[in-house]
Image (cartoon, rainbow, N blue to C red):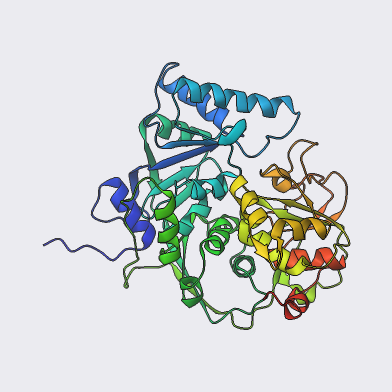
Amino acid sequence: MLIQKPMTMSEKILAKSSGHLSAESGETVWSKVNILMTHDPCSPGVISIFKKEFGQNAKIWDREKHVMIPDHFIFTSDEKANANIRMMRAFAKEQNHRYFYDTNGKDYKGVCHIALAQEGHNRPGEVLVGTDSHTVTSGAFGTFAIGVGNTDAAFILGTGEILLRVPETIKVIFHGRLERHIMAKDLILLLLKDLTTQGATYQTIEFAGEIIDSMGVEDRMTLCNMVIEAGAKNGIIVPNNSILDYVNERSNIQHFDIIEPDKSAKYIKTLEYNLSNLEPQVAKPHSPDNVDSINNLENIKIDRAYIGSCTGGKGSDFYAAAQILNGKKVSIETFGVPATRQVFYEIINKQIGSKSVYEILVESGVYMTTEPSCAACCGGPIDTFGRVNSSMSIISTTNRNFNGRMGDKSAKIYLGSPFSVAATAITGVITNPKIFIKNSPNK
C-alpha cells in the first residue's frame, strides 16, 4: 500500500501540477502552468525568444492563460519604453490574445500584481508564473506564484510547462493582536530584519497564525509581495473566506483546489512571533532588511513622501493614509500613485465622513495622479511621475530601497507602512503614526 508523505502547501501544489501523488523539497518536477504573466519590460524579450525557438509563426500554448500587462514604463515620452508596448500590441493582435490590457482606452488596468487579482487571474491551488520578482504577491490567494526570467517565460509560452526544483518551506506564525497603528507592512519588515535579504533563498515562506487567519485580502498581498526581499522563491497563505469570496466574485473559473499543509509536514524551520506589542517598522537605506523600530528613527528629516506601488498603492493603503491625513496638511512634497484604475475608482467612491478618500488626499496636499502605474517605484524614464531626480531623503510605501531604485543614486529611501508614510508627510520627520491614530475619530 502506497502511503502519501505529509506535504507543505508548495509541495502539494507542485505535486498536483506535475501529475504526481507527492512532491518533496529538492526534487525536480515538470509543472504545468495555469497563468503566465508578462509585462512591458520583459514581454519583448520573451516574444523574441519564443519566435526564435518555436518559429516566427508559432502560436502560444493557450491564449486564455497568457496575461500581458504594460505597467512599468508607460506614461512617458521615452521612445524605447513606447516601442516595448507597440511590440506587445502587435503580438496580441497576431495571437488573437484575450488578456492584453493595453494602455490605450478602457482595457488598461495598472500594476500587474494587483491587476492579476482584480481581473480574476489568481486562484487557489494553481501555478502562476510572471516575468517580475514580485509575482510572489499572488501567493496571498493560496497560489504557487513565482517570478522567472525571459527564457523560462518563452518556454512556458510555447509549452505551458516549467522545470522546477521543489523548494523547502519556512513556516512563519504570527500570534497576538495588532495595535491600531500597525499594518501588514510592519510585519513583513520585521520578518526581513530577522531573515535578511538572503535568509530564505529559494525557499517558500508559508504564513500562519491567528493574525493571518483574520487578515484581509490586501494585507495578505502586502506580506507575500515582499518575501522576495528575503530571497524566497514564493510566499503562500491558506485562503480564508475573504480570499474565497474575492476570487469567486472575479474569476471566470469556479473550480479550484483549496490547498492546506498537512499537520505533520516537514519545515526547514519555524519562526513564531507574538506581535501584540509591535511598533511600526522602517527599512533604512539602502536595503529592505536594514530595519529598525520607528521609535529609534524619529526626527530624521525627510524631503518627500510617496504612496504607491504593488506593495503600498492598493485601496486599503490609500484609505489608511487618508485616515492619518484627514483634516491635516502635508509639510513635504507627497506623491500618490494608485496601483490600478480599479484602485483609483475605489478611492474616489470610498468615504471617510463626508469626503472621499481621494478628496482628503488632495486637500491635504498630496499630488495624486490619475494614471495608475508602477511610476517611481522602479525609477523609470526621467519624466516618470514622482521620480526622484535629485539627492534627497524619501519615505515610501514601496518595497525596495536600493541605491537608485527610485531614480537618483544619491537619494536615501526609507520604507514604511502607509500609516507611517502619511504621518511623516505631515511632520517632515520620521514619525510614529500612533500619535495621529489615537486622536483620529475614524479609527
